[in-house]
Length: 232
Image (cartoon, rainbow, N blue to C red; front, side, top):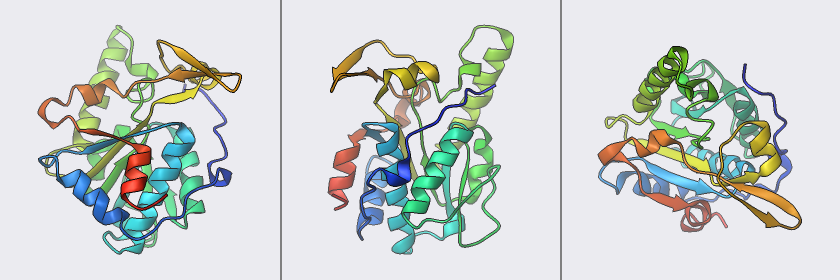
C-alpha cells in the first residue's frame, strides 16, 4: 500500500504567472538534444508542481497542444492530487484518469506513470516526480520475485513514456525535500543539509533515467528552465 502523505499546498505557494514563450522554449529544449527528452531539476516538490503547471498553462495558451493531447504522468495518487491543485491555480483544467486522454476535450490528463503504454494518445508529455524512491515505486525495489516483476513492468512503462517516437517529453524531478517528508514517504538519501533550522534531504533522479543509455536526457535546473522561458 502506498504511504499517505500531506504535501505542501501548492496552489497557495506563490505560483509564477505563465507568459508566452515557454512552449517554444520547451520545444527547443526537448528537441535540441538529438530527439531525447529533457530533464528538469527542481528545488522541491512544490517548485516542481508549480513549474510544470506553468509550462502546461503556456502550452495551452499558445495553442501548441490541445488540452486532451496533453498528458502529465505522476508516481502516485498523492502526486496526482498535488499536481491537479497546481494546475488549477494556473487555470489548467485536468482530469485524473487511468492513462487515456480525458473525455472532456477542454481538460488535460493526469495519470499514473505505470500505465505508460496508454500515453500514446498524447502529443506533449510531462513525466513528473522522477525522483529515486518514487519512480520506480518502493514495491519495485526489493530482491524478491514480486519486486523484480514490478520493476520490470515499471521499467517497460517508463520506456514507453520516453520512447524515441514521442517528440515532446519533459521529465522532471526534485533534488531536495524536507528530511521528515523524505523519511515519511521512504525516499532514499545519503546526506542532509541544514537550512533555517530544518534538515533537508538531498535526493537523486530516478535510476530509470540513468538506464536510458544514449537517450539519457541533459539536465537543466528549474530556475534556468523558468528564466529561459521568461517565467521569472
